[in-house]
Length: 120
Image: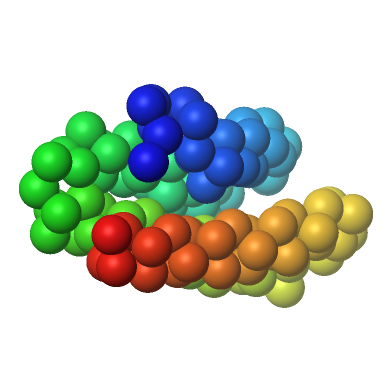
C-alpha cells in the first residue's frame, strides 16, 4: 500500500479529471451553471474526495472500502451527468466526449482497487 493517497493512480486521475470537469462546467450557459453544472462539479469532486477520506480511514478496512465504493458511485454519477450534457449541449460537449471514456477507465481502476483492498 502507498504511503500517501497522493501516490495512488486513482487519486491523481480523479483529481485531474475533476479539474477538467470543473473548467468545462463553468463554460455552460448561465442558467445551467447552478443546475447540471453544479451537479457534475459536485459528483466529480466526490470521486476524488472519497478516495482521500477512505485512505484516511484505511486502518479500518470496512470504512476504506465503503468510501472507495462511494467514490465509484460518484464516478458513475459523473458519467451520467456528462452524458446529459452531451445530449443537451452537443456543440460544446462533443469535443470533450473523451472525458466519458476517461471516467469509465477510472471507474474500472477504482473497482480493481476495491478488490485489492478487499483481498489484502
